[in-house]
Image (cartoon, rainbow, N blue to C red; front, side):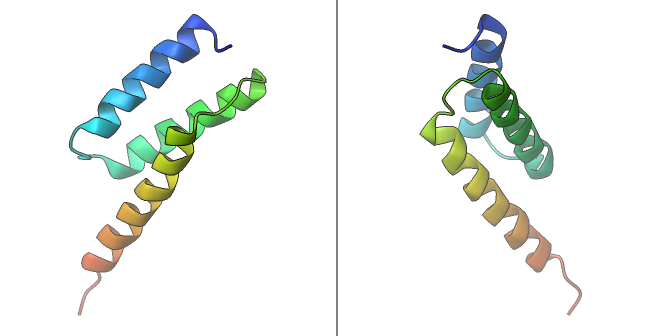
Length: 70
């Protein structure tokens, strides 16, 4: 079972994921750090967080390609 601090961070991340992704890289990093912290505490990593990492990586790549000079 996650500690209270990890649970609080998880809810904060979920709130950020539900809103507009203004800082995709920062959000991605925050999710990755949370997942690593959950693993370090031997807690199960929720599926929605694992899926969020994949979705954010896709958004980062899309934004990168959209900003390449033509």
